[in-house]
Every structure is written in C-alpha cells, then in structure tokens.
Image 1: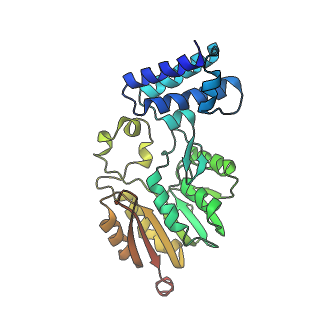
Image 2 (image 1 turned 90 degrees about the vertical axis):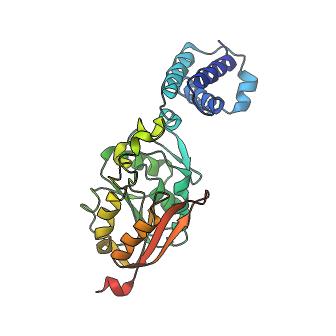
Image 3 (image 1 turned 120 degrees about the vertical axis):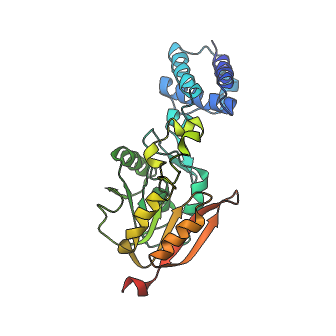
Length: 288
C-alpha cells in the first residue's frame, strides 16, 4: 500500500466513525505515525505529492492503524499525537490534562496587559498553558504553577522545557502548599456542573480528566474554595484572572466582591460569550 492510499483509507475509516474533519485528522495521524516509525523530522502535505506513490512500510501501516482505531473511538487527536498549540506555542498533552482551548487565550491576552515585572501564580495549571505562556510572552518577574495532580505537573514541566521557560512547580491542593503573596493570580478551575458532564461530547466526557472538569453541583464549588482564601495570597493592588463558563460571570464577580476585590470586569471571548472575570485587591484592604 502506498502512503497516499494509506492516508485515503485513514480518512474513509474516520468518516465512517463520524469523526469531524476526517481528512485533516487523517493527515495529522499519518504525519505522527511517519515520524514515529521513520525517526525523521516532520513532513508537510507537499511531501505526500512527491512521495505519495512510495510503498509504505509495515511499521507505518501498523502504527497508523492503531492511531486511526483510537481516534475512531473518540480519543481526541491531541492525546494521540501528544501535541497542540496555544498562544502560538507548542504544548505536550496527555490524558492527565485538559487540552488547551482557544477560548483560554482570552485570559492570557488580558493578563499580558498587566504582568510585566510581576510575580504570577497560575493555579489548577494542568498542562501549564496559561502560566508558561505568560512566562514566555509576558516578561514576568516570576511564574509559579500549581496543581494537585503529579501527572499534570509532569506535563507542565515538560512544556516549560519545550518552550524554554523557567517556572516554579508546586504540588498543592488549592492553597495547601502556597506560602507567598503574588501580584497576579490566574486560574482556569473545574467549572462544569456535575450533571452536565455526561452530556458533553464523547471526546471530553470519556477522555479528558474529570478532576479538571467537575465544578460540583452548581459549577462554582472550586471558585468558592479558591476565592475564600485568595486575599491572603494577593499583594496589595494584586490582580486576579479567572476563566469562567458562559453563564458564570455574575456569580464569580459576586464571589470576588465578597472578599474585597474591586474593579471587577467580565470579559467576553471571540464568540461574544463571557469568558474571564478579573478584579483588583486594593492596597488599603490588604493592610486592614
């Protein structure tokens, strides 16, 4: 079987399984399988036009078949290739972390306006996409990333190395192992209502870590835990940036206001949906 036939068959099998963007998925899976079995650098689609009639190795056929079977069962493409992009930067992902979403770039873009020369804590960091992007792009004084999952922190460490950034990594169940004050705290906590999770698309509900999705009965459980003690860890005039669900802007704003934050704003994403809540902890309140 030639490489061109291999890609075509992969596309047809993915289409039969109802995988969206089957042609694009087939190409990415083929490219990943080619790299793994040949030991050569990545190839582009132009390669297929010039080498597509070459006979594919048995190793390549077998590897691609495994990848296509996984994808056909709903395993996200990113978990198969272990690659994704966020803020134009490369990130490694596996089953221990959420796949970074473009929506979350809204939080990073807003934080970049304020983080130069600041100390930053990124809680519930997962892959580290928020904290590492800020460390890479924001000229921060320092960035610390924290998570309760050792596996997630291993992914974050790998991503810091991939992006040649220096971040401090802390295993912490929310505030348990946090002992300093920070100028900026960012967080994309679990915020999906518990009873909504079974209704999510199969790629999410069956494969992404429930620990990073489950926000309790009303989706606000983790916000309450974090915000309740947040003032203890914010410097005077420190800022917070939370990612939120589209219908959580008012509730999270009220939680922040309740612990003394001001200048609270809800920021919309590119789809026009509420996506980020930010606020400031004033110097005066910090000294009370």
